Length: 258
Image: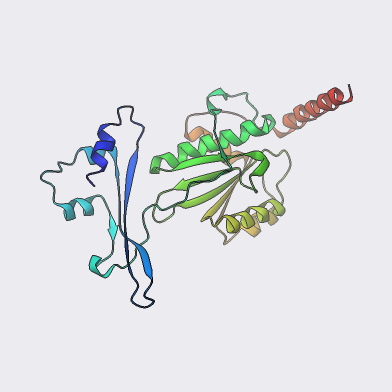
């Protein structure tokens, strides 16, 4: 754990929330004679709790237990364990994100907002949600997202992992096809869960398909509740949005004709 100290000590801008250490060893698998790699110990410490530890007098085993580290029952046996966090976060689809939620207000209609702004708003909102447990959320490039609008990385050892997020700025009821597509994307991405967020509601067949699967469907009401949870307000007016979007499409077609 000592490598954490210089990292936290030099973090004068408080950019680091937590550090995870995975103890990975290489050995010879006696059954195959081949080199095997295994994680046998994993522990996480946030900055505040780590900086309060007196490393000169601490008992390593007691400290490891207090930090809720996980490890093989017998380290000499090299029994593998699931690390607290071991997620590949490299993805060419990820792009730089920008802030949106601070521009919202009581009269801002989410169902009529720019689709790209909507995706970045969803990323920002889930970033607020997952950051409480040390997670992060990335948004993807629209032209090559393969059905993925954002990806959340949740370090929670029980419910965490890679979570695929799709954002649908819809003005009509979401059908089962969108939910089927999400489930297929979850399987293809090797994710642990999929979340579909829409400004509209879902049809009965969509909810039925999602039963028993690692899928969460959030409708417009759920979205507004999540915004309120993090101190932001907006509205969803589907009728108004249809008129606004229709007028925008009309103007776009007019300009193309000219």
